[in-house]
Amino acid sequence: AQSVSQHNHHVILSEAASLELGCNYSYGGTVNLFWYVQYPGQHLQLLLKYFSGDPLVKGIKGFEAEFIKSKFSFNLRKPSVQWSDTAEYFCAVLTGGGNKLTFGTGTQLKVEL
Amino acid sequence: DAGVIQSPRHEVTEMGQEVTLRCKPISGHNSLFWYRQTMMRGLELLIYFNNNVPIDDSGMPEDRFSAKMPNASFSTLKIQPSEPRDSAVYFCASSLAGLYQETQYFGPGTRLLVL
Image (cartoon, rainbow over all chains, first blue to last red; front, side):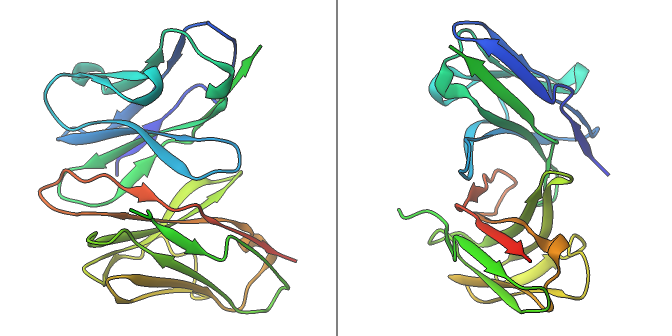
């Protein structure tokens, strides 16, 4: 069965710092990849997704992610975080032939002023 | 578009009571998913439907949980009898399934507390 690993469980950054959150998946076939964000007390919102084409994907609010097939990775990045980026971030994988999203355990990001 | 609608947003009940959570997917979407989120286990897929038919219910924790989708615009998740360990946030999501390029859109969730 496929799995998704997010190695950073808690990240604390100062405003304007750069962000990179790791995501690795285990599945050898074709994948669709997603990053969702969950602000405190709110539901999951889609940040960005990769289906095919350019492996560097740009999403909302200045986030981007790069799909590196050889490393089975889809890391999330933002060059300069803001206090309002404080949230939990989930990486998710959709594997071929199914509707089932597999989520990582999430990374709690706290941005300090 | 109103997005995925869930009700109630909050539910507090006593152990042993029946709980029914409701979901209205985005109009035109043909797949619907029920997730549970807890601190201990993160996000878990409980069950999903495609064209109103349950496709995979392997995530349903036990027989106390049941889900139905009587039509394309409504689904319920029922817990009977409820137990304190069922306390969690339950999310419903929907997508337009087809050709393997779908995105799931989540509802606001139902925060359930079983005392």
